[in-house]
Image (cartoon, rainbow, N blue to C red; front, side, top):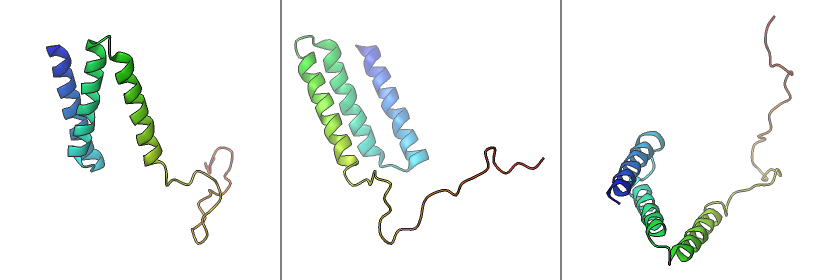
Length: 99
């Protein structure tokens, strides 16, 4: 169990550093979410009695988080009125490569 805790802590630290340096994300939120995720996964690995219940809750909250994060996305190809055109112009089959 100590190896799993060490690997989890190293993973959370690595992802937190990446989130801070590359993406500029609030690393406290990212680190907290990853710590919670590793805690639930540790529970699933240790407990055979509650593994199904914990797995269900993990999947449910992952789905709810994904639905919440993508609720304001416009997935259709219809442009919003007043928005600039975002379609790429047609190009040559192999680009504009000079002979």
